[in-house]
Amino acid sequence: MKEEEKSQDTDLKKTRYSDEELEEFRAIIMQKLEKARADLKILSEALSNVDEHGTDDTSPTFKVLEEGYQVLSKEENGRLAARQQKFINNLENALIRIENKSYGICRATGKLIAKERLRIVPHATLSIEAKLQQSK
Image 1 (spheres, one colour):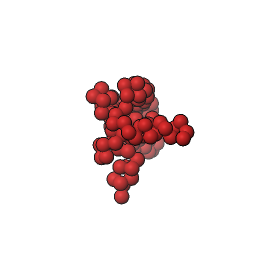
Image 2: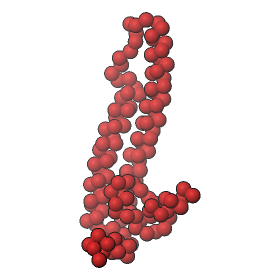
Image 3: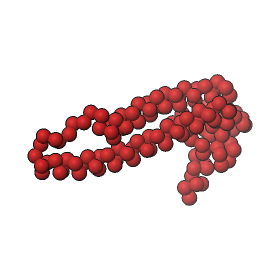
Image 4: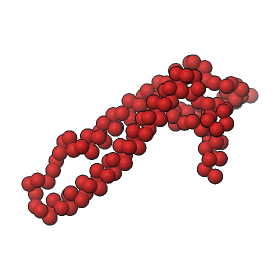
């Protein structure tokens, strides 16, 4: 049996991740959280026009077109900012689950979520199997 298969078999028998494994996931989450907060700051600044490059001194026709674009852009930025805030909240909730040692446990099956999935989607609360069942 290969080393990776042994590791997967061991993971299937465990009921929670070890403190060392939780620390690995915490580091991944903290890195993603830092980037997500920086991205949200950029979106928020764009939404509030901190560095306004307006069209106050341009022709009226261009100004109407530009204002229409700005409304669309603000709506899109608003949606992106809301989505980013939700992502941040999910990452922060994952940190809470690490603290109470319930991180990585599927909320549908009660089994451990695969490490590979958690490394890619560290805020996941469903295993692949549960997620597939949910989408049916």
